[in-house]
Image (cartoon, rainbow, N blue to C red; front, side, top):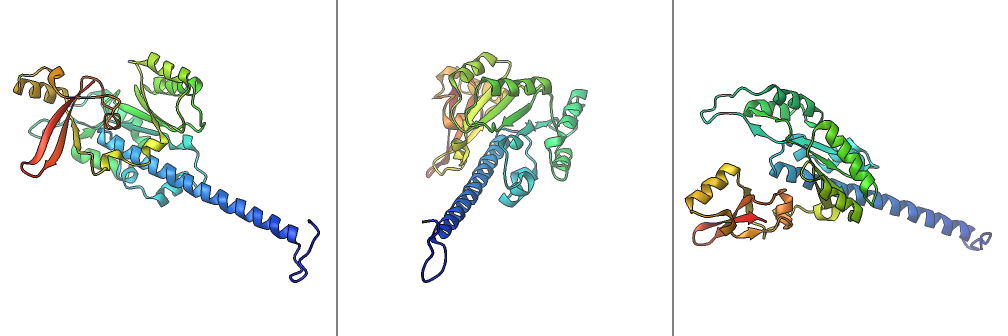
Length: 278
């Protein structure tokens, strides 16, 4: 009863229970906040590793970010929308002999445009030293919608931003599956805009680091041509990998691309195979 006091302690029992319940709720909320911070940190870390493996420029600060760095940058109560990422592909404009080719004006314009997401203290000198420039149309956005359910209105908002910034590709990191209408709308946007969808649960762990996943290398168009000519093959004669395969999605592979797979071998040292994306 609210007014009842313990005869021994003289403490209102109802008040004690209320206080304990309040403390339990507070501790639970704090624990949930910590869990979410850790979850979003791991997801963002995987996304950065994935972008780096796809050939996008990821600065030292982003690639080596600790959980403490993450909290200092985004705060204790993290808003998913604040996690938005904008990166550009790395393009080496050096000739075979190391001399520098003349870069078009659009390269420098796009370089300047991208500096907001680049760690000036580390990425800029690294780019200068390696003659790495950012080419127009090579950028990608990564969006983290705050709403659990993502529909057409969210997609349209992101597409408008992509249009205004001339960014043809994006990744959506969602908490739940997209609505059926949103999925249909994504198909309508192809090929002008390409939006990939990952659920947060898929990015808690980097599948590329799993012990059973061999090394994958995506071949360039020229490397693919050389491979087919060397073995007198048509691309359709190669073993296949589905575009929906988890590792194909990790690398953002498209149909007709070829990926080189390198596995360790006890006899030969390594065993190389190729897969055609279908």
